[in-house]
Image 1 (cartoon, rainbow, N blue to C red):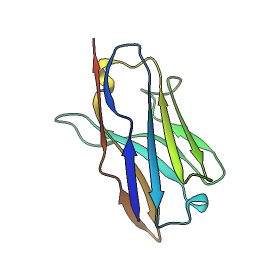
Image 2: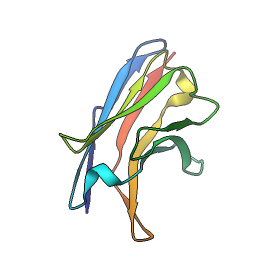
Image 3: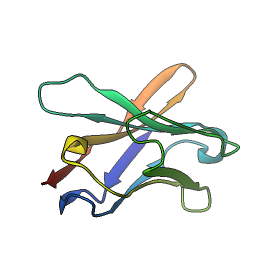
Length: 114
C-alpha cells in the first residue's frame, strides 16, 4: 500500500489550500481514509475521516473550515482547507488501514503565516 500526499505549501492566514492523497495497492473504494497532522513539538492528531460510503467526521478545531472528500475513480482523497490559521501549520498525513494494519503517507507540509 502506498499513499502519496501533495498540495502543501506556504500561505497567508485566511487563504485556502487543497491537499490530495493518491492511494495504490488497496481496493480504494471499500476503505475509510483519514487526514492527520503533526505540528512542531506536538503529537499527531486527527483532522478528518471519511468512510467508504462518504460519511465524514472532523476534529473540532477544523470543523466548518475543512472538507474531506474522495474520488474513488481516481483513488484519491482530498482535504479542502479554507480560512487557514497559523495554528493549522503542521505536516499533514493521509492514512488508511487494511486488515487491522495502518498505512501512512509521507506527509505534506502546510505553513500558514499571520
